[in-house]
Image 1 (tube, rainbow, N blue to C red):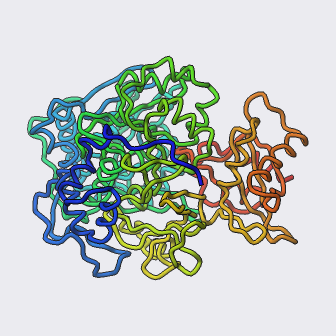
Image 2: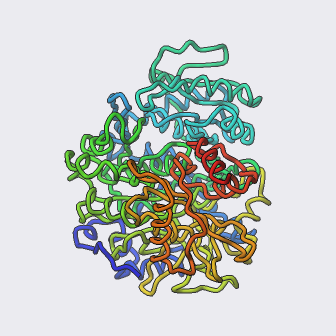
Image 3: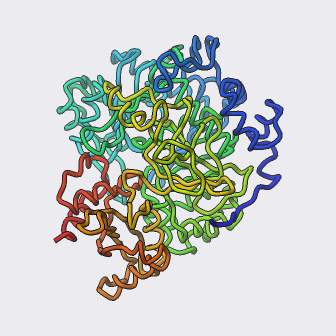
Length: 640
C-alpha cells in the first residue's frame, strides 16, 4: 500500500479538541482515545458533550438505552435541549460580536452576521413562522440557495420545534414536490431567485409550481434576493425588521426530530431520513472538532448546497462550535477560474472542503489561479463525496495545501449524520485514504460471513449505535431496516466496499452494489477508474459491470477526455492497456466507451447505477438528483 505524505506536528496537536479530550479522559494517544470511545461509549459521549459545550435545559439521566435494539437507539434520556440554542444563543455570553455567518453572492455582494445579529435574525424569523401557524412537529420546506436567510430559516424552524425539509435549489418543481408531499410540508420557504454563472435563476417560479403539486403547502415565505417579484395571495415576504420580543428556542426532548433530509433511492421514491436535536447537530460538531479540529474564531467553507447533507452539517456543526461558516451562492469557477481561491483569501477561510469531482474540474486550470491568491489562512483541507484518484488528490495537497496541510478525507452519509471514516491530524495521512474510523463509531470491514477482515476488500459496517444515526425513514421504517440492517443481525451495513491495510489505514473502494466480480476476484469500480485517469488523455472515468455470456460479468469503462483529446480506436486501446498494466491482464476491461459527460448529482457523486441502467436499457430509478440529465442520453447512445 502507499506511504504517508503528511505527518503530525506539535502545531496541530497543541490546543486541539483532541488534546482537551485526552486530558479530560486521562489518555495518552489518539489510538487510546478511539479504543476508549468504542469500549466506553457512554463515558466518551458524556465527556464529548461537555467539552463541546452542549447545553441541556433539562439534564439527561442516561446516555444510551436500547429498548428496541441498535436499530432504534434512545440517546440522552430525560434530557431536553434545542439545537438553535446551542448553535446561536448560548454563544451570546462570550462570542456575541464574533462572526457567525459570512456570505458572498456570485455578484460579489457580501454580508457578515455576528452571533448577536444572527440571534436577532433567528428570533424574528421564529416569530414570523409562529404567526403563520408553524408549531412543533410541523414540516417546513427549505427550497433555497446558499443565502444568509437559508441558515436563519433552518435555525428558526428548529427553534420552534418544527421540522425542516431541505430541498436542493436546482430541482425541477416535480422533484421538489415529491419531497414536500412525502413530508406533508405546511410551509415552503423559497427565494425570488439567485445568480448562477451570471444568469438569474427564477427559483420562485419553480417553487410556485412545486406548491401547486403539494396540497399540504398553505403558504410560501419568499426571501427577496432581488426584491422585485410580485407576490401572490398565499405568499409573504421574508421579514426585514426585527420584532421587539422574539420567542426563545423551545426546549425539546433529545430525540425530537428537527430535519427530514431526502436521499435518492435506487428504485422507488426518495428516502426521508429523520434526524433529531441531540443527534445530527452533535455528530456534526463532534466530527468537526475531533477530525477537522475546527476551533472558535476559525472559518469553515464547504462548497455545497443546503439540499445535500453537507449544507446543514457545515452550518450546524460550525456554529455549535462557536466558529464561523462561510456560505457562497455562485459557481466555483465563475466569472473566472480564480473565484474559489479569491473567496478563500477574502474571507480568511481556515478550513476548505471540496469534493474530488470539483477538484478534478478545477485541476485543468492549473496552478496559476491558486497561486495568484494568498491562501495563508488555510490550516485544514477537507474532502468527501466519493473516492479519490491520485492526480487530483496530489494536486489538492501540493498546489492548494503547499504540501503542508492535512487533507481530512471524510466518508459517511446522510443516514449517518456525518462520517464513519475520517482523518485526524494526530496520525500520518496516506494519499486518498482515511487514517481512522471516527471516534465513537465502531466500524469494521466484514467478509461475506460477517467476520472482520484485514488486507482485503469487504463490506463497511458499524457494529454499535451512535448519536446522529437516523431515526429511520419518514413513514417507511421497514424500508430503513431493509436498507441497512438486513444483511447481518444487529449490524449496520453501509453499502460501501472498504479495505483496512496493515497499518490501520482505511480505503473506500466504491459502493458495494457497484462492485464487480472479474475472473473470480471482487474489484471496486474505483480501482478501474483510478487506473483509467492515470492515462494523460483521460479527465474522469466510471466503471460498471454488465452481463457476459462466458465470463458472467464484464467491465465497461466510460471515459471523459480532457479538452483537445480526440477519441478513436488507438486511444481506446491505449487507455485499456493503461488499466491492464495497473490491475493485471486478467482484469482488463471489455470495452472503453467515450462519452461527453458522466451523470452526477449536484454534490458531485457519479451515478454508476444510472450509467448501468441506461446502457442496458433498464429503469434507472429516481433521477431527480441529477445535475446533468443530458449525460444519460450520451450513455444510451454509446450502447447502440
